[in-house]
Each structure stands twice: as C-alpha cells, then as structure tokens.
Length: 182
Figure 1 (cartoon, rainbow, N blue to C red):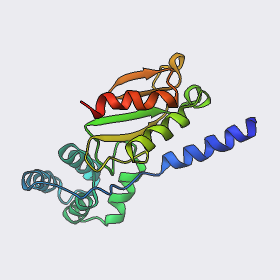
Figure 2 (figure 1 turned 60 degrees about the horizontal axis):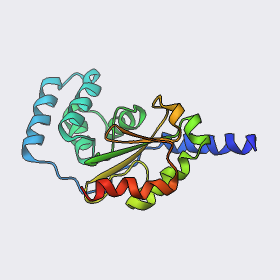
Figure 3 (figure 1 turned 120 degrees about the vertical axis):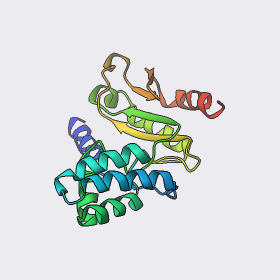
Figure 4 (figure 1 turned 90 degrees about the horizontal axis):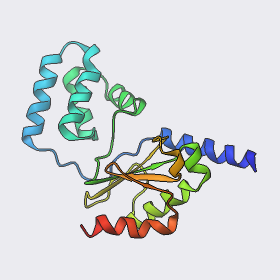
C-alpha cells in the first residue's frame, strides 16, 4: 500500500513539473506589444536581463504565450529555446492564461492522502479542462499546488483565494455552480 502511494506520488510530481502550453488563441493588443517593445528596448544588448524582460512581459500579458516568447527572443537576441527553457524552468512563469476564477487544488501530502486527486479530477471533468489549463471562455483555470497551509482542513482547494476545506469529489459540482452561475 505504501509503495503504491509513493509511486502515485512520484507520478503526480512528474506531472507537476510539466507546464501546459495554452490552446487558447493569443489575443494581444497593440498597446501590450508597444509596452513589451519598450521594455525590450531598454534591456537590449544585455542578455543578463532576460528574466527581467520575461517578468515584465508576464505582467503585461498575464502569461507567456508562444508569440510573446518569440518577440522576447528576437528583441533580446537570444534563441527561442532559451526563452522557453527559462519559462518552463521557473515556477513564476505561466504558459497558459489565468481564468476569471483560478482554481488551485492542494496536492500536498495531507490533502493527497485524504482524496485531493479525486477532487482535482472532478473539478477538471466539471470544467472540461486539465490541470494547468484555462477554459476556452476564459472563466476558469485549474492548477495543482503543493501545501497551502490548511492541512487540518484537508483536502483543500481554493477559488480566487477562497478556501474550501474538507471537501469530497461529491461537493465539487455545487461549489463550482456558485461561480458558473455568477
């Protein structure tokens, strides 16, 4: 039993290491592009400022879609692979947009052993997305997280910071309905 737990746990951690690339079409505005180009212009010629430019780009767009990564690579004179490598290595960078309602499911040990994977599966099925993705209408994004410090309420998930504790998979449809009908 314990061996199976650790095997599932390792598989879950490996899945968390992979970032999802957004399937939602990029909808950048000319104003956003101008702001990004201004940031790139002030850092041009200094490849050590790549992370700064990427952080600013994420602040402008909310995430780092492929099109933005190309602009950064070309503007900073670095290979696209380097930009993508930095974006996928650091947890602070997102390759998919966040929805109006960001659902974050804790997969820390206390939550996991009390059924948070079932809760996550039910959320994803109810919203029609996988963890790390945003719904096509932009209303919901789902992410996995480690511990949020509410182990006594395990399993736990949050929607825009509002904590839902001691939930079961059966509780999920009713909780999501509050936001779907808002």
